[in-house]
Amino acid sequence: MYKVSTFNNISSKGLDRFDTENFIVKAGQEDADAILLRSHKLNVTEIDNTVKAIARAGAGVNNIPLADCTERGIPVFNTPGANANAVKELVLTGLLLSSRGIVDGINYVNTQGSVNDAKELSKLLEKEKKQFRGQELHGKNLGVIGLGAIGSRVANMALELGMNVLGYDPAISIEAAWRLSSSVQKMDSIQSLLAKSDYVTLHLPAIKETHHTINQDTARHFKKGARLLNFAREEVVDSDATLSAIESGQLGMYITDFPTPELIGKKGVLLMPHIGASTAEAEENCAAMAADQLKDFLANGNIKNSVNFPTLVLERSEGFRIGFANKNVPKVLSHVLAVFAENDINVIDILNKSRHEIAYNLVDIDKAPTEELLNALREIEGVITANSF
Image (cartoon, rainbow, N blue to C red; front, side, top):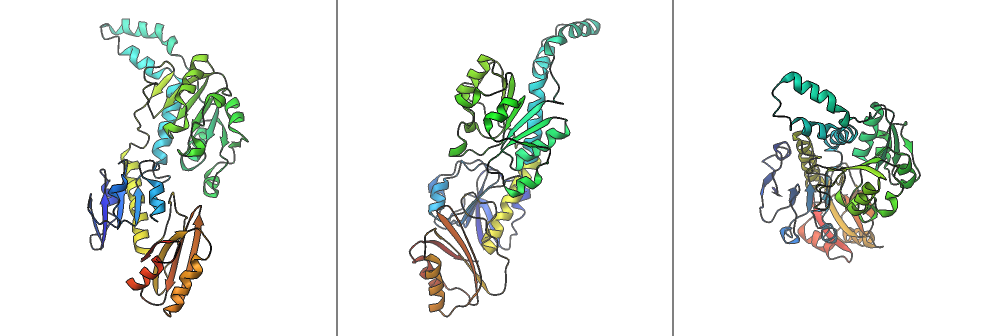
């Protein structure tokens, strides 16, 4: 019986994936085998020594102590793409709101409550509508920085709207490349993309390499009057640099889902309250995907969509399974195999991969592993965790 501790309200579409015969799922339970959460800021002290895996029902994992989890051999899962459609649709909303005087027009109409005559109101609005004149998206250039699960959808959507799409992503995956239309023009640098784009939309993770991708230097390259959209992460944009670009006229507007105090009330800035993934469908998709990944790991040791461990999936064969994580240093695997040999254990199948400083291994053996065997593996220098599945 596995124990899964939850934080936040997890959609029933995810919770229902855990059958009651094999899983006990409830909020904040002790001695949990796994943790399932959304945006809760997870403290190191909330991760019991029994925890083998953590799943975030969402894409960002900046609310999880990632370095500590890696050091303890705990894979952290996220759900890339599960909320992609929700964010894509909000990006479209941002594009439209930044192109037409929709918000100002609505606000203006709502100030005319004192006009009681319909003909008078119609005449007034006909006269004043010119101040809300905008531009069409069709034929404009959209620059997409980051062509992953969301960025590729945004790019393809923009093509269907008749936009010309420029893309930049030096780390694009094969899977993302397959999703992307061949009509997207690949750019060699962010600067060249900014110089040609009427609209720029960011779809980057918040990591060291992407911090302040838009800064004082890159902002100088915006096509004059361009619109910048950020539905990725707050950290990828330097707010001060963006405000300076708006004040100078280099940037026409900034639309973001990540308000900060310095942005509130500023001219040329349109703020939304972090609602990119706030749809019933996205929450359900994320919860179901996170639950399935936890189940597969707890039952089979398989790892998909981990942000700190390598992807590793080994189909079950006959025999019994052991999974172990180790520091990515030489000779660890040979020492593990030596322990198997000493215990007269035959290896049926084995798969191992590494990612940066950590390696992960799945081994199918012909004998049921004892706790003594697992402890012997854990005592090998470099081995971080060892579990049976």
